[in-house]
Amino acid sequence: MPNGGDVARHGIVPSEAEEVIRNDPYDVSAEVVNGEERFVSLGHTDAGRFLVVVTAMRATAIRVVTAFPANRRLVDVFVSQRRS
Image (cartoon, rainbow, N blue to C red; front, side, top):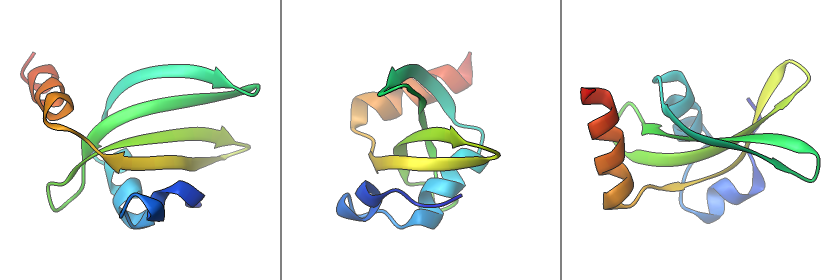
């Protein structure tokens, strides 16, 4: 899974974004940007850091477009979705 250019700018290393995708994230939304379908996911790293990760499919690979730390409200959404 190649990393996106915006990931480092938000203080996130590519492996953290990949962990979120592997750790059964909550799918927040999907949208089309410039003809590319992008998926917004909310989840946690192996160390428990909550992140929002935006991905897109490229052929057979998942491309991380960007990732950034989740705010408290989003963490609460994740926790409430996992309880239901």
